[in-house]
Image (cartoon, rainbow, N blue to C red):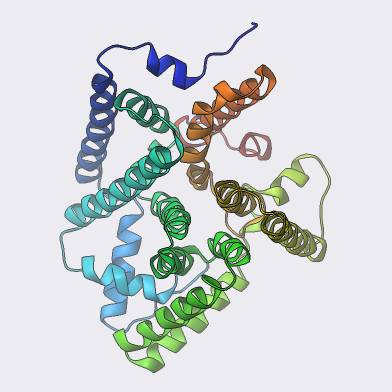
Length: 370
């Protein structure tokens, strides 16, 4: 093999480019309809929405949100959001939640693609959607919040580039109140834009916390935050192979190089500091703004997956829009880099298939593929 085609070149050779766009839209629409029917017929099997809806009901009635380290794991403010869906029929709520995720995910992914692709015509957008589909389907199927997370982070970066600082900070804050670790991207943006972004992010984070105190009795809310923090602090999943995060901790055990918790925490902190240094150095050296922002989003998502606190198989959808976009830039790279990009896509697809869709006995080696 002496040449690998770029996705860009493939799209250019196709007549009737709009047909590719309609094909991409139809694939996503059919998959969404199929998942909604599956949930309606199969009940709560492989569906996380009932857990979210129960948290919304508990919030509305002032009941405890956290009983163990499993179940509802997001912050109390997110439970307040799901209280909006607490009174609708479960099947309708599950469909609305997935619809929100799909619209946010695809809108942000296409926004990123159009903003960074010089000639994002209908054909290229259609191929982009088609390549995005197989490595994102698992989250649509089980109702994970990960598509919303990457949509919010991508939007935050694009809004910062558009000088919409407050909206950018609100996007990071919303993502952080779901899963905390998206703050990694927000902090990198604060390094790039210290005067414009950092104080807005702090105000947004504080304001969201105060908002939760307004939406329920303050004593109840404070107690739920205490319970949430304790459930995250004592989470034992790292030592349970069936639930262990798919991160560097698992990889070191696969390679028979166990780390102590102290050393692992030091690695997490050191690598986070290194990413901040890269963004700070790029700002000092006057890198092009586009390069800085790509670094913040790509390195931030990479850190969240490899060294974040809770990486599941479905969490790897954070890479999906960024990796598929990278395939479109392959024409600018030598064959070695092109091969690595396509191999990365193939490995990500293989890992998702083996871990999410095939009924195989899971072991530490299988889970370490991703």
